Length: 278
Length: 286
Image 1 (cartoon, chains in turn brown, red):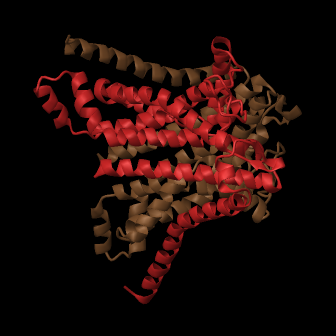
Image 2 (spheres, one colour):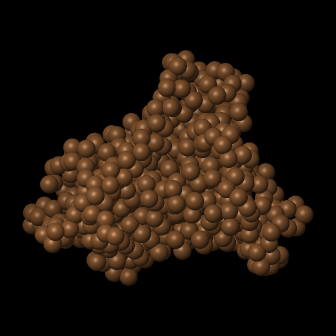
């Protein structure tokens, strides 16, 4: 018996539509749950006060400071390294064995799961270099973790700058470095910024690589040698040890909202760039 | 060009070369330090007794991680069984059926959701999936099936995004040719579009597997972390990543070395998966 292909066509269209909306639905529901359960427990006091009794009461102020310190310092380290690598790969060499090996290294770093970064940061920075559980150990580990993202996005952004602008710059007598800093980088800046924003989003949500390098002290960090706790780690501890459901949902909401906001800004910048070049 | 300028150019180039080589240095350091810490135990206890050993009692000299290797693969395949069909359907829908407007909203929305931290997925799994499994399928709820469901959802954005890109890169003329022959839309998708995008779709599955096998925090929250090979969907299990994360904070001596051995095995599996996935993506782009 032969089934009418038009019938199968219709059937599959319905099946695909249902599955697609189911998939999107799951993801929408996840955000909705966090929003609904968390919104009632959030106020300014929660954001700006210190936790009491392991986080059962009070706010999450030190974890916000911990997260901001980790994110900003990692970006400060990773951006010059990453953008420098991208400039080297695009402007200063031709495709060769060396660039192939460097690209392989970057791709491999991108594929390593965060727990292995945690394991490495723990043995290398915390133990061998005797930095202890500190913001510095966390920052150095996270810098390596986000480096591939920054390199890749910067490379794409630099490649998207039209060749002509470089030729014009050279013809005016500019050196290579002058061309890169005064012509190429300003044009590529929004794309590079997108990569930085996406990296910040990843740092804010990271747990496994942070908890074994930065520790989980709830005190307000005063130097980079202090241990500290990020929002994600705090949320993990609240949820896993069943300390307080209300506080866990509230922390999750602030965590998810800040990541979504950071990513939305990143995509906004990226779209502006795409529309400029196409 | 004057003398000073050319000197400056040389300095810049040297510095940039050093920056570019730093990624290789970091990769090297990660490998070396995990290897240095983990390999002595392979020599002392024996590779076979670690990889194929059933008993993990690190304070008593048993370092068998075979059940964890099996568990890691089980949850990864479980995640793929759930995530691959949903993700691929979603990618096909986005590229072949949805209007331009909807595409413009859905694609970035799905990518934004990739940013939701894994601890949040784990937490929601504990609150919603675990009780569901406990009530309807039995057991404690902390199980292979719960973990697979959560990981399946977590890898959706990866699968959708990469499959979508590779389906979109199938030339429009292929589709038109198929329609001209009188094929229906589904026949075109099934016989022309998906086979043409095959290597990219496979790469998306493999990258999804890489994400699932490396996932840690969500897994330790919902897997139950028992030290046995799960015999049914409702049995608890412990993955390689979970083993490291659960014990690293307090492990000392040989126990800590055992966790680094676990790390070596994980690193080897991940590198193999990434290599296969990159191979697939490169073939597509050629």
